[in-house]
Structure formats: structure tokens, C-alpha cells
Amino acid sequence: MTILLLLLAGAGGFIGAVLRYTISKWINRRTSSSFPWATFTVNMTGSFLLGTTAGIHLSEAWITLAGTGIMGGLTTFSTFKLEALHLHRGREWKTLTAYTIASYTLGLTLYIIGYTFPSLLSQL
Image (tube, rainbow, N blue to C red):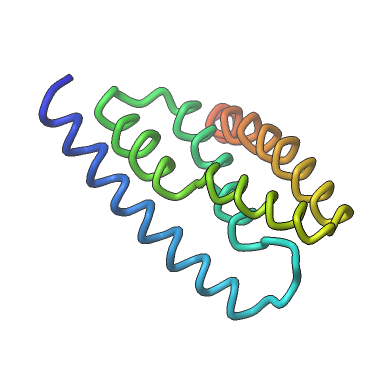
């Protein structure tokens, strides 16, 4: 691994983490639901953007910056798990079920849509 790739991953991770923090704060100020909308939104956005990044077939440097770095910093599987655990402990079964199913199915779906998006645009 080169120093350049390490720097790109780190810079991208910084950008993604700042985006996640900013977006999460913005969403949390506007919602009062037990459903974790902030984490859900950044994870779904990241799924789509990661799929799009992969679908463009960028160079290793761009994949490292955008995919590993920015999308890795933006999305958060650990926070998803923590919030799911809090919903479980609070016995919020409907919210837990909806959050878990939506996160996995919509996340994968958005990745696939994002992956095919560049080729769809090129056909227009």
C-alpha cells in the first residue's frame, strides 16, 4: 500500500465523518421519532453513493478516496447496531423490525441502483 492511498483513505474518512456528523445533527434537530432517521439516512445515502462509485469503475486512488474513505466515514454500521440494541432494550419491536429490515433491504437495493446508475445515464 502506498503512502498516497493511505492519505487518500484518511482524507476521505475525515470528509465522510464530518458529513455524517453534519447530516446527523441536521436530521436530529428536525425529528423526534424513536426511529433512528439520521443513521438510516446516512447509511442509505452511502449505500447509493458507494454503488455509484463502484459502477463508474474509477481508478484505485479514486475508489480509495471516495469508496473506502468518504463512504466509509459517512456510513456507520456500528451506530446502526448500537441503535438497534437500544430499540431492543426499549422493547420497541416494531421500530426495531422496520429499522433492521429497511436498513438491509433498502441499503442493498440502493447499492444496486447506484451501481447501475452510471450505465443508465450513459444510455440517455
